[in-house]
Image (cartoon, rainbow, N blue to C red):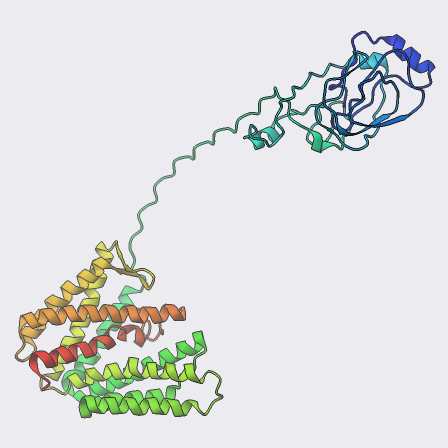
Length: 463
């Protein structure tokens, strides 16, 4: 312990120091040691000469004197007194041999202050009553022997027993200060909703495509069939390219492109029977074409090829089959108008009023309010188209047709979004500014084509 922990008795005067000088060793007490070692200034009836060591277990309650090192092992309880002056051994464990500290003369020892007796019921650091550990550690020199956090005592002597330091029972640990409340932040300005695309470019491209489609549709039907075949081939190229880039799947493009174009022409020339036959031969060509490469990945490649053949050209064949009727151009126009109006209604209502997500894991931008808008817009457009464009058509049939188109267009859009999410891409291509690729425009048209063809046949016949 240092000079602030263990005090010398008030009547230990210069005579004790003189006797110590005659004995050849300075009188006093030992300096900083391990916890509770009890080396104190013990004036009394005589002194042990030399630097002796008194090993022992427990504590030494007798009238021991000496300038040696008291090595203790075990427990040092109790408040024993050496000749009635020094306060015996402190509470705690006596661990190991303690290095001898500097000796002081008796007149220096008289300057120290007596150490208060520590009660037995002081809780160990970290017990149930020590809730504010951080505050206890951050407080000042609250240790019994006056040792600071870096092991230096108040008299400047270094101590290496920092593990023995314990807070005084009467030293109240300061409470953690209340955190200062954050300054009120200004509310962020509401952000303007954005479509996420170049709206001007999208409108321009859409108008251009519409002009090409309408011109080919009402001038020469065969030209429109060629436009559909070209769109199918480009869509197949985008799909197979993304599959190979993102998944390493090599769906054979050559048989798919040739078979896809043949399917569209066969559907227009021979109807549904021609479309099925062309699909079967396209699938067979995919299986054979892939055999020219190593067998590794054969199954996934041909599976992707068959999926692509059904998804793009076969569904597009129903558009060509609608064109074979007497009012085929108006049927195709109704199909295109209802799909575009459905998408436009979903976008307009969803952008303005959309708050509830429709399928957040598939397409976070779609809302339930947008779906309601798609249904309403498509039903109104369907009633007008069936009443004024389709021979023998009625408005109520148009309502049902618009409802079916809104549902199929939404499902087709979600299906395409599912594919793109699996591939980890936003758009299938970059061919159409503001729209992405061809497949990004065919996503809602392809699954809607067989729905419109079937309902038209049911309502007004195939001719």
